[in-house]
Length: 335
Image (cartoon, rainbow, N blue to C red; front, side, top):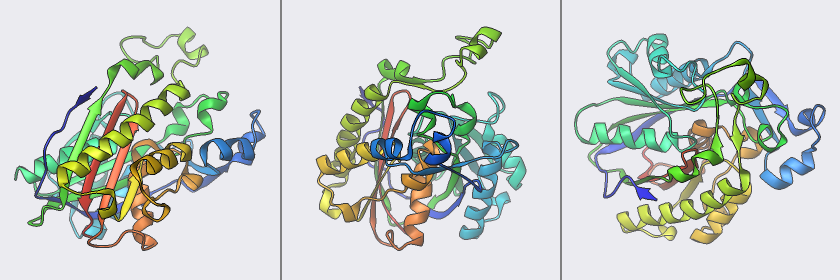
């Protein structure tokens, strides 16, 4: 395993936040009407009770656009003042162009560069690290980072092992300079040997689309759940310990721990191993499921709205996903 980021990142902060989720709620009971499962089976194994599902005409850019507008309004920033827009997603509108390009056009960010980051469910942390690097290097002043997913359209709805886990949504943060060094440290990593455990086999240049690949459902998400679970529990603890050590802090110094919302068992196991008590850990996957790159910003927004995350708090975020990738970030919350 390779740690891609070492040392401290200073001079960047999260200065605004915005989210958006589809209106439609799909409960476990609804899934049990067309699949051999039940609310009890899903909830006991994952912690998920319901998830949001996009309309047939909604794509990742549609959800991202609303989240972006809300974020910019909250931060008092005009879209024309954006320097860079980063969209993190595993369910883009198209293979090309980048979903970020579409979002830029929709919101009027005519002066911004744009690109997507594809790092699985760790994408938001990777995007935040990229934005912080640009800002702390005084290259850009206003960077918008979005996590946007319409995972319902890349799932095999006959596969009980995957379709019950995921939902749709989008979240955005604005990253700007600060004199307080509010982002203390990042740790990003990847173990490519685990790539086969979580992937969409067909649709790229390795396995182009054919009638046979469509019939075999090879354009939908495939996951070896046991391997992903072992990877996640191992790497989240190690990565979080590293960013805390880099900043010279301990678990006791963390006011809120926001992990990627994949499975309540992973969250609880990692929290116990790290030594967090229940009051320090935030989770909302019971109502949203795994929204991949959108899961952490959705948590941040709700934590702010409910008073769980306040200005001056020390926040620890951690993600993991296909690649297999991982990433953690330690920051002081300034909203």
